[in-house]
Image (cartoon, rainbow, N blue to C red; front, side, top):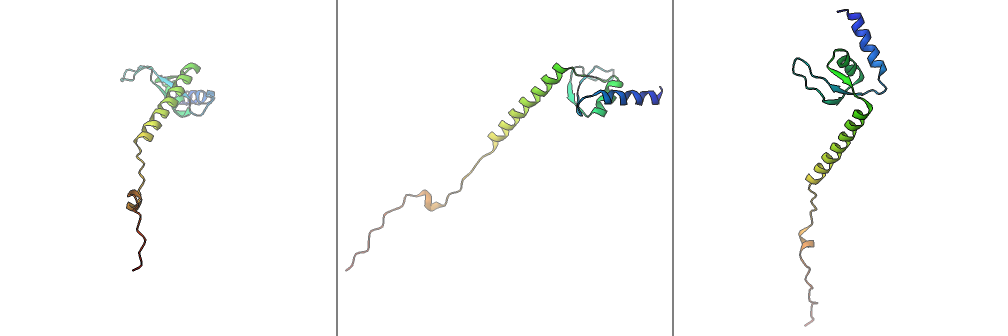
Length: 108
């Protein structure tokens, strides 16, 4: 393997990305890699994975679906977190009991 050509190819693929964190789709590999898993990675790692045959660049439709799923998952996580927060208001004991009217003092 020509290392110079290998790293040159990685640099070329990295420069071809339009965004700093492209979405890649994994490919099945002999060491147990699962095909079809989408993930967002730094451009340098994406280029390395593509050149080594572990992944391919996601097309525009796959990227849009992945980002929409991430937005939906974030909204669900935020709503679950908000529902788990308990808000407590501490009131002094005097404000929870009804006030009695005092009788005016009578003069004797």
